[in-house]
Length: 315
Image: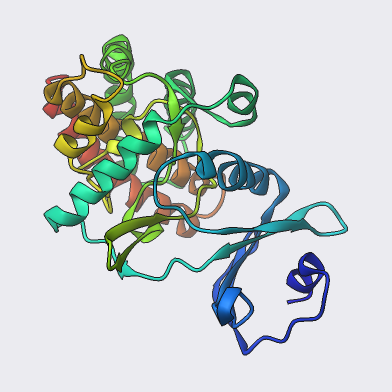
């Protein structure tokens, strides 16, 4: 509330504050009654680096896109310069359900509009790289970590076998990397959300029809669209490919639905790479009780990766 009042240059009374998320590196709160017309405001505390990406998306990119977006109220860095506050309209609406065709069509049209939007070279340079080279770097980094633990005495034989399997699958995937890149080139580089999952979406209903509200752009970047199109990874939005393609055809008449389906299939693989990279932090040299959580996730992701590679006929 102190940060919000400083941003608004005045003292503002709140009806209450809800803690939505409270972690070491970030926190999210709902400030009741302080927004326009007494609405709630979402206050997000995050690192300055994360804030720079989200601030660019909310203030420079989304206002220029003809798609439904949340109102951005501004940001404020803390005096120490380590953390920053972002203030946004609350995403009030229904939960997104990928099992509902209407929701998936809505997501496909919204995502197509986002991916068609242009961005200046200057702003592109300010966004993190989410291109194929970045994903290849993740593959190689994770594989190197797995190799380091093949002789780890803390790991049972079954866990070591899992790491060997992942290494073999990563070797096979890298051998096909040129094909992955070629498939994904169907859609030119664009602004990508990077964490396009149902928990970051609400569906708002109004007299003019439903609209999609998307938040948490901290993983956003400039790169390949495939990850946002993923359709079979855990918690995927699974945007409707036909709806997405119908929007893209406005500027890219050559785009074919079959091509986009292949891009989405590659997106499944890229999303799994992302998820695997997030859990490798649990594989530090520490007692097995801490490593076992990461291994459990890796076991599930390995099964998913096997399925995705088989879909592409690469396994």
